[in-house]
Amino acid sequence: MCFTLVSMRDMTDLRYRLPDPQAVSGRWRTSSFKAIAAPESDALASNLIPSITQLLLHDVRKLMEAIHGRQLPGQILHEHVVVEAAEVVKLAYDWNGDVKSKDVLLEYHPFGARNGGSFRPDRMELLQRPTADSASSKDVAVLCGLTLGLETSQAVGGGNPPAYVLHSKAKVVTQQFFDEM
Image (cartoon, rainbow, N blue to C red; front, side, top):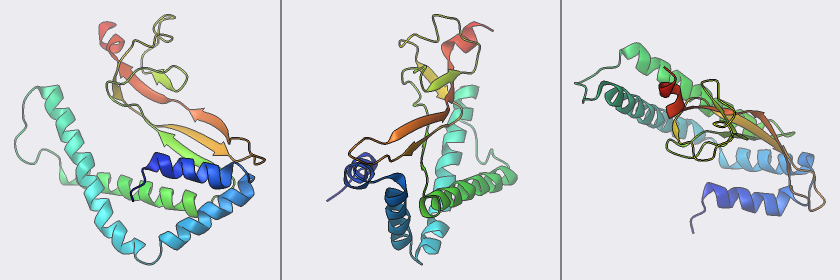
């Protein structure tokens, strides 16, 4: 049986986050994560981090090819860029483990914008200064998500859904950015 991340989150919300306050559901999450991320997590990290780094660098290369309008030859990224990308991926991996295994008081939900998706003013912010009608339009397509947004949630218990707080919106670029140049 295969669970998606969404179904696992839904299952967790129904089983632990709806009936119990955050202190109980957060302890359940940290205990579960610690049990799953046993000693083999170091071996997993040593394989996973290079793989994610290569995916990231592949996307960077595709972006550079789209900007230049042609396929780029051979190794275009300097070695220090590859090393720095691996460091960023390792920091993200460590942060993910820390918030899942140590922080009991909040659940963290980083999110991004899907390229080509619809602009959502409640969760996104334009790189450029928006006009009054463009910021509220749902017809504006996102060309590229630039930063992640961050939302947290806290279980309140008693059968109530968790309380969500948006801390920062994802920053995006739309066609308007280029039209105003």
